[in-house]
Image (tube, rainbow, N blue to C red):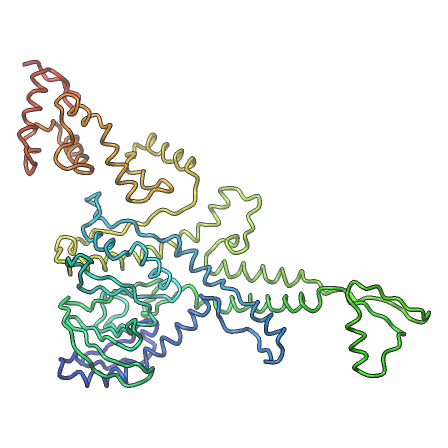
Length: 527
C-alpha cells in the first residue's frame, strides 16, 4: 500500500495519508468509504483556506474592526474601507501572461498540439488558469479524451479550480502527474476519483455527507489526467500564491482607510461653540434647538455674556500619509512599482521607469517559466491522447508568450530596425516583438512577404510559375535550403519529396540555357 503525501501547500506538514490501491468496480463502496473518511476532510480543510484567500482577491475580505449591529453609520464606513488591492496585484501579472504559440526550436510553425489548444478555446481559458494559479498558488487543468463539435476525436481541456480538485502525489515536488485526484464536478453533487486508467464517479450532494458510488469509466490515458500549475513552490511541496503572504499588509490598509473615513465623517469640519446661552428645560426641546441650527447659520445672541468660538477640524494629512505608506509597502512586497497602485508618475525618466519595473519583470519571468512548463506538459499529454506521437514526444517544444510590454510603435521600430541593421538579426525574426501584432498577424505577414520575394517574382515573370508546392512557410523553407546548400531548385536534393519535381528541373535547365543569372547570383555559361 503506497504512502501518498498530501497535496500542496501541506506537503511535508501534515501526516501521511495511507492511500488505498485503486479498486475495481466491485470495490467502489470501499473507495467511497475511504474518500469520505480520509480524503474529504483534507479537501475541506484546504478549500476553507483557499476561500479565505479568494475573499481577499474579490475585495470581500473580513472587516478589520468590530462594530455593533446598531451603529449603522460606522458599519457603512467599515464597508467602504474594504478595497480589492490584492485582486489588483493578481490582475497586473495575469494581464501580462498570454500564450500565443507552442513550437519546437527546430520548426518555426506551431506544433500540431497547438490545434488542440485552439479547438478548446484555451486562448481565453488560459486567463482563468493563470489568475487562479497566481492568486491561490496553484491550480489544475484536466485533459480527457473527447470530440469536437463535428464529431472528430479531440481531447477536452478544462481548467479546474484548486477549490474543486484535490491531487495526491508520491513526490509533490518532482512528480509530473498525481497518483490520484479527487474532483468536485460543476454540477456540485458529482465527484470523480481519477487514477492512471479509470475514473470512479460518486454522488455526494450534501457537504460532509457520505459518498455514494455510481459507476467506473475507463479513460485509458496511462497517467492521472490532471496537470498542476504552480505559482511558486518550495522543496517541501508548499505552493505559495501572491495573495496569502501579504494579507496582513492589505489589512493594515483597510484599517487605515477606516480610521480616515471616521475622521472624514465626524471630525473633518470646524465645530462652533457658544458659552452663556440658556438651554431648554428638557431634552426634547434641546434636541429641537439642535435641529434648527444648520451648518451655514450664523450664531447671534443679545446677551453680552455669551461668548462664541470654534474647535478646529482634525487634520487628515497623517491618515493620508499612512495610507500611502501602507500601499507602497504592499507594492514593494509584491515586487510591483508603487505608481501602479497610486497612479503617481510625475517627472520620471524612461530609464527610471524601466528600473522601477525590473523586479516586476523578473517575477513575471519566474511565473512564465513555471506555468510554461505546465502548459507544455498539458499539450504533450493532449497530443498523446490524440495519437500524435511526434508532438507528444517533442520534449524540446516550448510555449511562447506574447510580448505585452507597453511601448510606442515608433520606439519599437527604431530599436528593432537598429538591431536588424547593426547586428544582422533577420527582420522576419523581429516581427514577433512588434507591439500590437499577434502570432496570426506574423504568419500572415510572412505569407504576404513572399508575394514580392525576388525568387518568387523571377519564377512568376520568367516561367509563369506561382508558388512552389505549398505556400507560406513551405516556400521559405525551400529558399533557406537553397541558401544553405547552394544551387537552385534544379539541385537533385530539392527533388526529394516534392510534388511534380520535373518542372523545377526543366525551368532550371531553361534558365541555364538562356544565360540568365541563377538565384544565387552565379551567371551560367550560355549553352
